[in-house]
Length: 231
Image: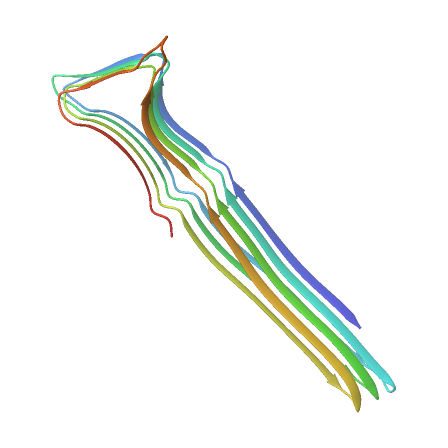
């Protein structure tokens, strides 16, 4: 007797979230000028595979069972707050300029595999194998920037990019093989593996070219912040 059970879960999130001013002139009088791009992706993946095999014979019994569970979860988001293409952004009298891009991607993955094989007879042999594999990747681009543009703030000017990625992974594999016979052999094997990768690019910058330079002026502080806290 033989039995095979397999389960596979594949999850991909590839979003683009942008707040921007492009090739435009924007002026705020007595108030703030704010661009905010936010992404909060969530993947909740469960993959479970199971198999049971029973072999019984008067002379001989044989049973083989194999179970596998695999889960693959990936986020490749692009989150950006920016002013570009020779735009002009100004706050007059009062008001801050703030460009903020943030990503909080979360991957929760559970992979389970269990197999049981039982054989009985004058001679009996069993083989049982269980394997659970999980691969989780967060690879996002988060940017807050001004490029080839003119920014003039009556107060402060802030460009902030941040990411708080989280991966929680559980892989469990179990295998049982039983031979009930005067002459019997049993083999049981189980393996579990989880690979987790966080590979984000977080940037806050002001850039220009010789042909189209950037200009940034503020009556208050000018701040560029790029940060990541991964768990």
